[in-house]
Length: 90
Image (cartoon, rainbow, N blue to C red; front, side):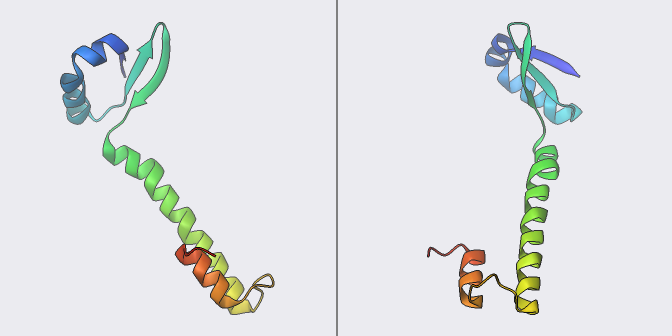
């Protein structure tokens, strides 16, 4: 895994991005002697973060729908639960 310091990144940003695209390996970013961040491909980002976030959202939906089906909505009407799920304001 390659490490690039902040000055190199600023001076050769396009080249660093091209290398990231070609190799697909994360590139560590350092400032001083500490690694401060990592560049990853958009595919890695989607797989690691967005897909996980979508799965958590689906699980929340499944749980709420199960509560509705079982008739245990925590004292709320089904309309209130659906409005919450759809992101409507109260």
